[in-house]
Structures are given as C-alpha cells and as structure tokens.
Length: 239
Figure 1: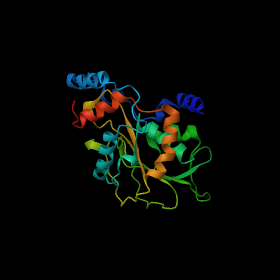
Figure 2: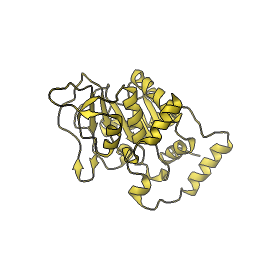
Figure 3: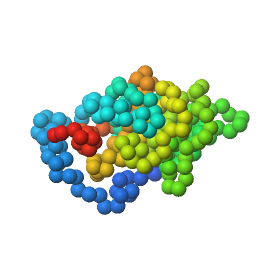
C-alpha cells in the first residue's frame, strides 16, 4: 500500500498544494547562520532525517497551543500531526475520512485545493444528494474571501483549511464557535524565519487523528527533522 500511495502522490497535480514559498516570496533568503548552527548541533547529536513520525512533541505542543489564536480549540500534542505542507495535510485527512470518488461535500469552494478535489473525485453536493463532508477555507485567497457564512453541519466531518494564518501570518479566523470535532489543517509558512523550509499540520481529536496519521505514514513516513527544527527555532527554541 505504501508504494501505491507514494505513486499516487507523485501523480497529483502540483496545483493541489498551496504555492511554494519561492512562488509567494520570490527569491528565498538563505537560512540564518544561527539556524544553520542549530541544525548542525542537532545533526551531530544524532538526530536523523526521520524524527518521531507524528512530529516532534514540542512542535506539536506549540501548534496545538496556538490554535485558539485563530479561533479553533486548543489541542495537546496527541491531537496534532506535523506534515510537509497544507496540501499534504488535506490529502491525508481526506484519505483518513474515507473520502474519494463520489464523495459529496458542502461549504467553501476548494480554491487553491481544487485540483486535489478533482483528482480524488470529490464533487459539491447538490440539493438532491446528501453530503458526507463539509469543507471550509477560512483564509483569503487573493482578493476573494472563502469563509462561508453557512452554519456548520454537525452530522458530517468538517475540515477547516487555515492556510498560513497560524503564528501571525495574515489570514481570516473562524467566525463561529468551532466544536472540538472540527479537523483543522494549515501550514507553518507564516513562520518567515524558517524559510526555505516548509511544514503543515493537522489538528483533530486524537481518535480521529489516529486514522489520518496512518495515511501520513504511508505517504511520506514523517516530516523532515531539519524542517521541524527550523520551525522550532523560529518559535524561539535554542539551540
């Protein structure tokens, strides 16, 4: 299954993921010398490319603790999964929820993730078809606001895509009281000091996250240790 999923991921249109940091920021700055020193310190200490598969515990703790800043429930480390990007977060979340060809969804237009929805065969529910998933994009995509005003449908899983709004990057927060059952995905690209490294995250109730984590492990095993260390460094962790 692992090989099959990896092959599938390679065939996903590149537009299924948000624009790369290079595309958004132009020429990327070289990593800060002190960051490189920190990465060297941990590498020489025996930290390999493959850290704890759900993500480094301290990084998961910091992500979970920051979620209320963008209008979502706080999570402990067992409620956060670190991924390579928001695109991968959405991919493994949809797989973990059993979504695929024929799945009907309500809520926001997929926007930047439309190619992934198309590739997986997801379609918007019409008045004659019951939805099995609700999708919400709570950030601004260009000049268009993707945050819907419709109420949450508590009868089906709900995925909130938050882009890079965590840790202070410009974005929109949720306009409603978000229940604990909502699955939150996003990227850590708002941490400008960690460029050119990239990461994403999924935050959910631990029981729900367990099924999503299995697909993350099948698709890319774990997120690279240098990227996670860069995020921790940007958040103040030293060395």
